Image (cartoon, rainbow over all chains, first blue to last red; front, top):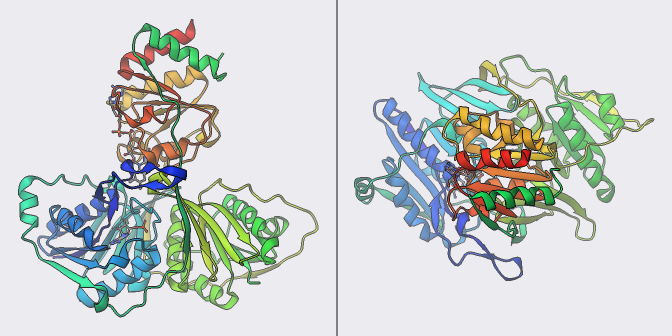
Length: 256
Length: 315
Ligand SMILES: Cc1cc2nc3c(=O)[nH]c(=O)nc-3n(C[C@H](O)[C@H](O)[C@H](O)COP(=O)(O)OP(=O)(O)OC[C@H]3O[C@@H](n4cnc5c(N)ncnc54)[C@H](O)[C@@H]3O)c2cc1C
Ligand SMILES: Nc1ncnc2c1ncn2[C@@H]1O[C@H](COP(=O)(O)O)[C@@H](O)[C@H]1O
């Protein structure tokens, strides 16, 4: 009956970020979402709970107060309860700060757990740091880039993907894993799931309740929009379009 | 000034990281230390390529993961207090870098694409991609050490020179690790390196099944190019080897021509194609984001359009 912690982040949907004047990032029409790969972490936590015949899944997120929407979204994905570490200053944290906050909250609020599941990387920063950093701060074994996972007899068995193949590893619990997108197919919550999510317990932890200083180490000097736009000529799938396409290829000098 | 460390798992990584380290060393006035895995680059090779000191990681038993070196690295780093620690952003390196940074209380710039030292302010300047590729993040660090991971093949490997001198020291064997490797499965490697390809035909989810990729291959052959893929095809469907994945979590490519077939054009993919000279696409959805990120493209069903393109090219 495993107790699994799933760490997730409520992020800007990058598809709606525009390039503003002077190359500034324009967030004016953005939407928010649960990090793509964090959905796999939540799904895996839920799957392990169900495979273990009970237990519970506790979602933990650190963010600004408006991330409350994300907590509800996450709860509709099968978790039992959530801990929301919320402060206006938690908007643009460095991975080192996020990991330190998560470590303190897990230590003080979740006395006993078997596994911490993180995504392979957050959708906005994709630093791939918070997971392994958190494992060190909690002093537990860490297995990153997991594509297959099972828990048995106080140990985990994981297939972890590296450049030259797959390493099948074992480690004692509690441990931390970061999961790859193919480990499972995250569920798409239905209306009933969303309704149920509203009834699940959420513990909100405020900045004042934490003792750490959580200072940053790096400084973000600038965050500017990249320009990927091109001319974007659209052609029809008819004979004229095909001819123009091939002609453009020829003109580009890549084919003769 | 505190030294520069490179920590490498393979010979290729060692040479590239030495190249990156050497670009920083003169400005920082720092010595270069290469920490290398047993059986990767030899101390002589590292010294010829700029290392002033080589620290040899102990050989691991078959069941010990690369991460087992962490306590030894932590101890050595505390003793030597390097200013910068460079890793390759490969799976094992990324994990070890983050764990070492946590233990040292250090900042870590992941997947750093530009790295320099500013003498005036005494800080390390770094750049990386954020928001899936929609943004460039510029970071600075004036605290030591700063840990940096660099995506493979983003820096030119260091060249060897004759007559260089350096010291070599063997590091102690690490204590047993809690994580044990119980089995290894080698994987299929792509025959060609798409990072260097002149023409790339990239297959996306618009293909219905693996067998249909023959059509993409046929176009690639007609164009004298290589096949690439979006992440869902390599990492989720496993239709193609992972080294063919183009984008943020895959390879950065810079071909003369990129043709996306059934690729929607999400920023995480397109950021990998920013260095392409010509980008074109075939997609049946006229609102697919890839059209705005292409020079030209056909709105249509790839199963109908691609054979016609091949035919027209033969004329
Ligand atoms: C942190 C992070 C990192 C990522 N890294 C990468 C990365 O490195 N590389 C990468 O590729 N992705 C990456 N992704 C995933 C990325 O966001 C997209 O999900 C992915 O690129 C989409 O792949 P696709 O275009 O093949 O599939 P889809 O988005 O599903 O698009 C399929 C397209 O095919 C078209 N289509 C369907 N049928 C046909 C037909 N018969 N003829 C013509 N067109 C057709 C559809 O109109 C659609 O536009 C990452 C995601 C995250 C969150
Ligand atoms: N603010 C956050 N709150 C909770 N978990 C987070 C947060 N940021 C990152 N994580 C977790 O850490 C993983 C890696 O994040 P990153 O290091 O930013 O790529 C994510 O996939 C999440 O599982």
